[in-house]
Amino acid sequence: MSAFIADWLNLLLRWAHLIVGIGWIGKSFYFIALDLALRKREKMPEGVMGTAWEVHGGGFYHVEKYSVAPKELPDDLIWYTWEAYLTWVTGFGLMMVQYYFKATSYLIDANILVMTPGEAIVLSVASLVGGWFVYDGLCKSVAGHNMPLLAACVFALILIAAYGYTHIYSGRGALSHVGAFIGTIMAVNVFGVIIPNQKKIAAALMAGRDPDPSLGAKGKQRLVHNNYLTLPVLVMMVSNHYPMLTNHPHAWLLVALILVIGVMVRNFFNRHEAGDPLSKIVCTLLSAAAGLAVAIVITAPAPIETDGTKISDQVVLGLTHKHCVACYSATPTNELFAEPPNGVQLETIEELHRWSQQILAMAVYSDAMPLGNETGMTKEVR
Ligand code: HEM
Image (cartoon, rainbow, N blue to C red):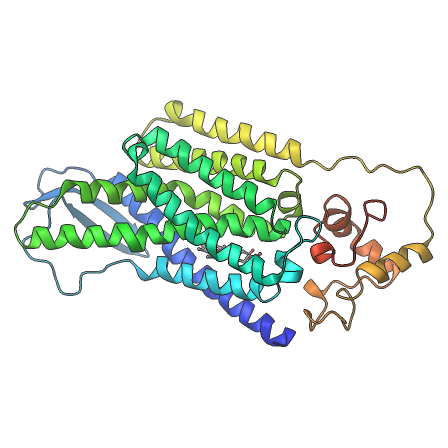
């Protein structure tokens, strides 16, 4: 596939992934806030457990939540399902275009593990599928009846996956896979548990039967997980812009910190929306801030070791021509690129000065570039 077509496919899938991802996560945030905003009022129709008033876009909305299904449900009852499914479909499409089709550059790093593209792709698919089954097994096991224990098990599962990915794939490939691993769990939670259970409950209520209470409990358990995993997934997904995260030598430990920070921030929002006083919930933000401080400290660049020898411009240009210019030139010779990536050219000393901070971040403080270290850049050269 030509670089031009691959770029368009990548852009369109990324765009679609963002649109449906925003749709999914936005609705999930909205319904959690709505649920927490419901209040009992003096006059409420039969079967209604609480109502909320909202104003948006110049209109007033009055929402009623039924504890059991109302006597009649309209034919045009809205089921919010496709956003979650399409987030997975577009995410997996992007995984193929960004990582599977260009595995040697973006997924495999020979300094981490030598493998063929076929092996890298099989491992990727197997880990995403396997991750769901292990997670689902944990939820159904005895740990599933103990919320803190289950949370600790899911945390450990994600960390094991992160440790594995960071010891198999390139930095960027690894953290994107952690995001896809969690995102797959979240999407299958909707597809395989939450929606089917909700349909069974609705069918039982409509038939005048008492629904099996375990159906609601199981759906709720997965909803809570999705709620808490959303913020960490977002960081993993955008981590590809930040080599201080993706190419950190202990990136899997950063995943642990991102999980703690994301969960604490989410917990703050949930409790704030439920009306808890700030004094009671400020500890969640303080914990998140402590996690963030640790992350900032451990990602701070180490001072560059140098013996003071001055390197001539000619030597520098020789090195950048060997390691950088195949992509970062007006007419890249690397077949992955039809244009210089992000418009960056590194062919002259002036251009190297202009992009010096990015060069430091990508190739000196981290080994994010060259891609997959295909040119074999050594520590000394960096
Ligand atoms: C909760 C669900 C998800 C959300 C909110 C989400 C969000 C995002 C966002 C915002 C990006 C844009 C990153 C960027 O261009 O900087 C992204 C990229 C991406 N997502 Fe997702 N995503 C989700 C689930 C998934 C799943 C399930 C997969 C795969 C099975 C996936 C695969 C990818 C890939 C491969 C990229 C490109 C990463 C890169 O360029 O390095 N996502 N996602």
